[in-house]
Image (cartoon, rainbow, N blue to C red):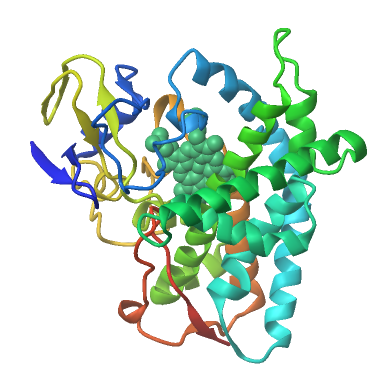
Length: 368
Ligand code: HEM
């Protein structure tokens, strides 16, 4: 089994097959509590594994408790009730893009603001705050972009901003997501203010980079595959499988995060000895030819499509229904409202951000 180095040199075992990555995600003997001396880190600053209060870094029973509240707040029923708002927000952004001429950067005009505005409304924030959200959010997924001091300062500011939102929700009821978390009582248990602030902060971060990345990926992949785009236009009901294929082909959370074996664990790839850390990149698992026929072909009709882009097991993305809804709305409106939409450069010339945990495009130049 290969041992690779994280960006700051920490060693971690690497597994790439779909079966191994699935096991790493779903076997409860792998822990996400990486707070021991020598635990692998992506950066020397605070990284995605550092915060013991982030749900992603918890194990049961603490994890199970918090997750139930998040699952209830982001239930399929709630997400369905938000669809109209997602649609209106997407339409408004596309109106503004269309009124600006016949070309645009789709990342800036659409893919980045849409998930941000959606979460802004769900958290009851003013739209002016969204610009700061983007910057704060960048700090959490930064590997090398910001200094440790910048990250510390930015995150403290963000925490105080979210605390204000939670307190103002208690007074005004603004922000359905916060109301759901504040009002939830599950088997006599409820969340205190500190835990609600941490949860909302985590949701904003988890939702923004990933969803905006996937919207841009979807647009780029469809425009780069005209026959697939034509099939989607002819059969709009293909939007569900198309979204799954976008997520499989270019997963936003491409590398995944490490986990530690709490005992010797035998995977198809070999044994992970107790105490060792392992990482299973989603991007590799999603192209495993043992599971996906012609894995390097982008095919919106692919069925089944058991990609791992939302993870698997206990930490499976709690916002998957919201992300899917945003992606379906965003890509459907884009391809129907702009019948002549085209990339202004070759897909191979698109530039990717470096130094972030989430894989995403710097820009997506389009014309219509
Ligand atoms: C296309 C968009 C998205 C992608 C690709 C994505 C991907 C993922 C993945 C891969 C995980 C599991 C990580 C692991 O187990 O190591 C995860 C967890 C999580 N996601 Fe998402 N996500 C997306 C959107 C969202 C949204 C919209 C929200 C919230 C509104 C969200 C909230 C979370 C949370 C809270 C967790 C941690 C769950 C837990 O630890 O139990 N995500 N996401």
